[in-house]
Image (cartoon, rainbow, N blue to C red; front, top):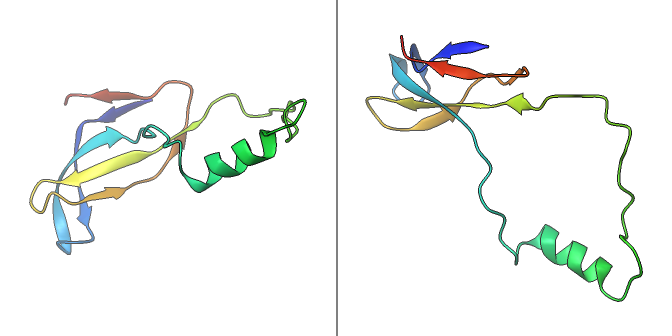
Length: 93
C-alpha cells in the first residue's frame, strides 16, 4: 500500500486542519527491568523448559502498520488508522 508522507488532516490539539508528516510507529527497545520481563524471568528461574506454552496456530500472516502523525504547527504527535497489509510504503507526493 502506498501512502503520502505529508497529509492535511485534523489536529486534536490545535482544533483545526493542518499539514501532518506521516511516519510508521516502531516499538522501542525493551527494558530488562520492566514488570513483564521480571515476571517471565521469575517464572523461568529453576524451571526445565519455557513456562508458558508457545502459540503455534498463527492465522494472520502480516502485522498491522500503525501510523504516527506529527502536526506541523504544534509538533504534537497522534496515532491514525492502522492497516493490515503485506507492504506499506510512504511516498513523497
